[in-house]
Image 1 (cartoon, one colour):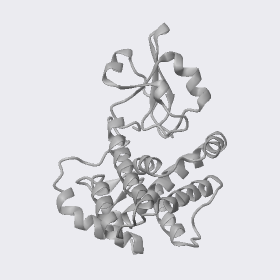
Image 2 (cartoon, helix red, strand yellow; image 1 turned 45 degrees about the vertical axis):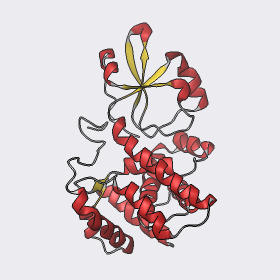
Image 3 (cartoon, rainbow, N blue to C red; image 1 turned 90 degrees about the vertical axis):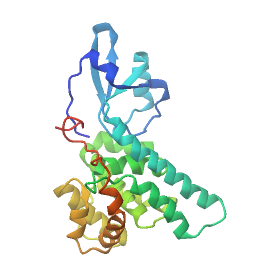
Length: 266
């Protein structure tokens, strides 16, 4: 993913989050730009962009540096990761235990996902991709590795678009984790292969077509955009946001963003 490769001074490391390299899972999407500290020449080097990943071979090459460092921005991504883990646990228990009523599951899921909206009622695709990566089963390593090497722009678009779909699907009462994961994989793979999403043949296709346009025009999904759409899924999501609005608009925090001084894109 494109980002501003900001030059960092070693003195800034004290303000960053460090992560032991031997705790990083191969092919796990990164929540922020990653840096290493080269002690020999007292230099901080950018090694990975957000939503990139380390292969086992790459982890082996950098393990001598001990730690990977992430900017404070990573905190903004963690809340989406945490909510996805909670929802995954709720839906996984549903599949393994006695079936529960959909409204009971959705009450728990809704509470978790509502915490990811803030007083400006908007969410950027990057954070939806983080959410989807944590909620769904892992993507096939050979698939994302080949896409990153051969079609990096479509790889990024596939992650963002499939992530937005998963984020929306959870709001629309999709509670079958296997089905959600299958849709995520299909959207990613079709996007990487060149799908332009202009001739929808299913409900999933229609939602993705709308999301694709939103990403191209606004790079976010917001209540204002939803209100201007006549699509059925936007009406359902709008109804949920209006229901949550009194609580959300009273929150002091604005939605996290990848842009500006606190993000990683100027």
